[in-house]
Length: 223
Image (cartoon, rainbow, N blue to C red; front, side):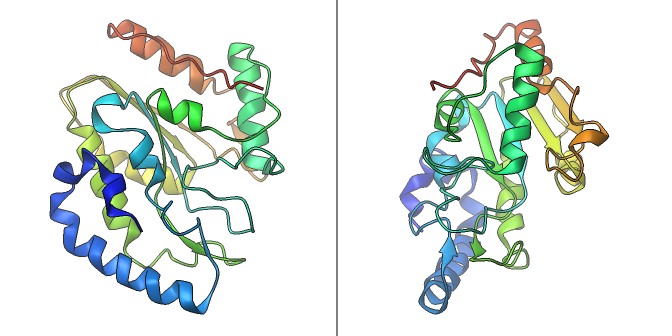
């Protein structure tokens, strides 16, 4: 785990240094015994790509994809050339329905991260083939601290809480600065038809940003 990836987050998360050290030690041991995703050094990619002063929206996932070649440190994203996971296909379907943006032919959401969308999983690592296998490691203490630190930022920020696990984080979001909580069922095939489709999260976020004097997010992704 590359702690240098934290950038300006380091100061905001200074109280988590001991926890980060413990997680780093545990990861080193775990990687010797099993295949862990995302690859070594990319666990903090979401924080590296979307620094605090750039955050405009936060999309919360659960934990990384647990099949080979998928996870690379951004929630819901996969590298170009990797088949789209079902949840991401559904996100693209809703994006097209909401904003008329044609789905790209790949799942790399780096462009969103670079435009201020913090694509944060609540647990940042997973063992191959074992979904949620690192849920008890302490990652959620770190990512809760990230959410709380984001909540303290001065700029308008939208928080996207898809599914019950993400919605539990709403208690961390309470600020005098402009905030939006976009809450709906998860985009997974099991729940997408229960209210995710038709929820229009992307236009909600852009309307909130423009109402608070900010430019809307460009949600398009180059094909």
